[in-house]
Image (cartoon, rainbow, N blue to C red; front, side, top):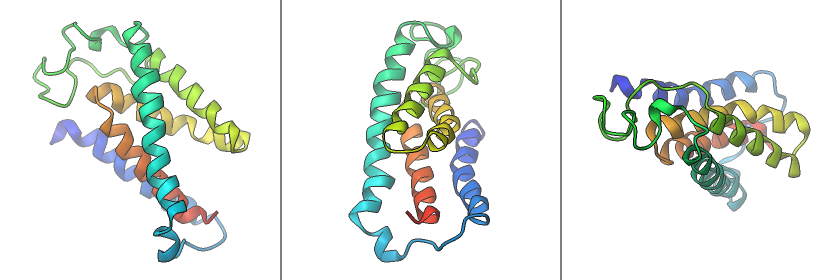
Length: 162
């Protein structure tokens, strides 16, 4: 359980930050009808899953395979999943906070948000993107960033009232 503490804290951080942010935002929370709408399902579930499959699953994975990640945790080395006493579902070895693969993927992720959003909004997704990428690499799996992204988007769009 202790090895999953950082992920649990990251999952809790989204709602806490959204709640604090909400103190400064005017407006109202979304109604239950709005939350059950296709629009909300799209922005809180479909888009985050698609974005994570593309950015963390394809792009970051490709960059990691090309050596732009932390060597201690690369495939085929001692840091490979299942070694180092970490157990299944989490990579062994020291967890790098930031890899070049994560940084490049996060720059691309934030840049992609410029298509539909302001520069400020795109910049604000950069930090969560680094968190998503960190957990993709830490667990060598796509489910942690998907869970985080879905949770963060759901909280954000409930309070944002767009």
